[in-house]
Structures are given as structure tokens and as C-alpha cells.
Image (cartoon, rainbow, N blue to C red; front, side):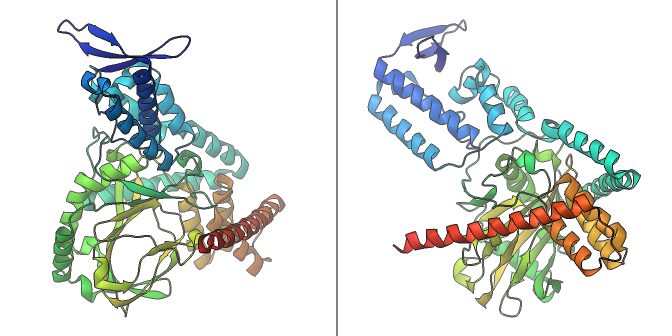
Length: 477
């Protein structure tokens, strides 16, 4: 087994094997192999801090140590992966680097005699979840309670109550992992990551470590095409093809999985075996364990010529997922796009592929002109993370429709107090103020803040359009 130790001058890498009494027989390697092992260790560590787990427990025997050509090929392959992999910033990267400084962490990577299960459990307790920034969020809320008063405090308590109720309802309908479930380290699924754009997630932006490439699209199928076809057939037998409901200005075909018991049974099995473990791995900053994930609203949607598309919208959950259930050769058009990338940039997703992302990114579905396309969509909650911004904004929208315009304005102001970059909160508040200035009373500081946000948003839009124009010109060249 390999171990690495430090000297004052450089790494001294040793190829060692464990003897029967637990001691190490050490063989010092030549300088060239030392350098390669140092590069190998660095590449593995870089990949792991960026969320790539598949090399964590790969081992290298002394036979490999003696074959420099084989070792060089392995090093160069991993370094290529580092070059193309996404960077994780902020607390996640710092915690992982700190953890790798001790002896046990190197054993995780280099397969030393170490209890991987308990060690990994401790590691993932450090990697993210509610405790990492709970104090920061609590401090922010306490400051805002002093600023906004008892009405704000009552709204926060109502958020927490509604969140707990929604999580309980989710567990009644969908799979919830046991409390002691730990994140799965290794996965055969690889993903391509896309940037979230200029606007951070509405809730927990500091936890996600924005800006990050936190839109994740699987490179391979999460389940076989035959399984997807079987699920669609089963859902059609349950009547999914005959139902429709309204989304924005479009009418969508499909139904909620709570109305499709057999389809829901399949989805629950996939939550346990595939979706929850994968999401826990993809978003370690925000998800401490699969046991905190909750499937809140889940539907199977049918797109065709009569129900062709969706508006640009955001999803009603801290995380969201979309899974393609139909092969691409069975329809024309369609596909998911994200507003900040441009309407023409459709994410490639064949049957069984999935997209996983924070729910507040603006996206839409392209028009299907021929054939039928089914997708599975789910909004996800996290038990130990209350989305105060989203809930305040949603309640403000409901109050606006009643109408209780003064209280609606307060809710938008409170949401912006928690996250000043919440764009939907900002636009709703501005619309409310402009349309009914005599009814709505907003503070001068709040209006100045909104004005600054609007100017900043306009500048970002101009910069993005200019950059995209330049990039397209380069591609054409």
C-alpha cells in the first residue's frame, strides 16, 4: 500500500506493505517514480475536492510502483480529468483539504488499513449539511427580527411549521431514507456541470458557494431504456395520457405521481437506489445525507403537438430534478433550456438521463413539434433546511392576490432582507410598488436597495449579451 509523508524539502513517497503484526515493510522508490506518485496523489485529491469520488478507494500495488510507464499513463489520465472537472469553491474545498492533511484521510484515497465506513461518516459530517452555516443563518434571522419586529418573527415561525408539515407529507407519499443512511461514496454516474448564471440560488446561496457550476446533467443513463419504456406504459395504463393541467399560459399533459400508484411505486424504488444517493453526492454543500431529502411534488409530464412546451419558470423546491423518459428518436423538438444560457442552448438528454439543479434557476421546455416526449419532474425539500426566502416570496404572492398589498410588500421586503439578490422577490416588490404607490408603504432604504439591484441586473444582462455575442463570433470563426 502507498503512504505519503512530508520532509522539510519535499514529499518522500514510499511503497509499503502491511506485515502480519501490523508494521510496515518500506521500500524507497527512485526519484522519477516518487515524482509520479506525488502527481498521482495530487490529482486524486484535486478530483475528490471537486466532487469526483470514483478514485477514492483505488489502490496501487508495488508492482504498479515498478512500472513507470503504466504509472505515468495513469497519472496523465487523472490529470486530464482534473483539467476538465468543475471546481468546488468555498467551505467544501477548505474542509476537504483540511481533512486530507491527517493520516486517515490519505488512507481513504490510498486504501490504507483504516475503517473507511466510520471515517467517511465523520468526513461527510464535515462536508456540508445543516451545521456548517446554521449559526450564520440563525444570526441573520435574529438581526432581522430586531429590525422588522414581531410580524417577521411570526412569518419565520410559520415557514418552519409549513416546512415540517410538507416534509411529513412527503414521507407519507414517497420514500424517505432512514436517519442513519450515509452518502454513497462511489457512483458509476458521471455528470457534466453547467454554470448557474449571474443570479445565485434564492435560498442558501452562501452554502452552495456561488458562483458554482451547480446545474448537473448526467452523461449516461440512470436506468435502462427498457425500464423507462415499461414505466411510461404503466403510467399510460393508469391514465396519465388523458390528463392535463395548466402551467403559466400553457396546458400540460400528464399527472402527479400521487395519482399514479404503480408509477409512484417504481419512483420510490429509484429514489432509494439511485436518485437520493446521487443527489447527495452531487450537492454535498447543501445535503448532509440522503436521509434529509424529501420528494415533495412529483409529476410525469407529456409533451406533444397539443401540449408542446412550458413557460420560463422556477421550481418550488430547494432542489429539482428532470429525467427524460422517452428516447430522442421518438419526437422532434423539445428539451430543457436555461434562460441565462439562451433559448437555443438545449441540454442534451436522452432517455434515462437526468438534470439536477437548485430549484430557483429560470428554465423552460422547448416546443415538441412531432411525436411524444415524457419527462419525470420532481421538486425536492431538505428536512434540515427551511427555505425562508422562497416561502416568504410565495406567501407575498398569495397576499397580493387576496389582496393584502401592504402585508405582501412586507413579505417581499423580508425575503430581500435575507437574500438581497433574490430576483423574483425584487421584481414582485417593484411591480407592487409601481402599480399601487398610494397603497403600499415601503421604506426609503428598501427602495434605494431595489434601485441598485435593478441597475446591477441591467448591467449583468448587457455584459452577458456582449460576452455571448463575442463567443458566438469566435465559434463561427
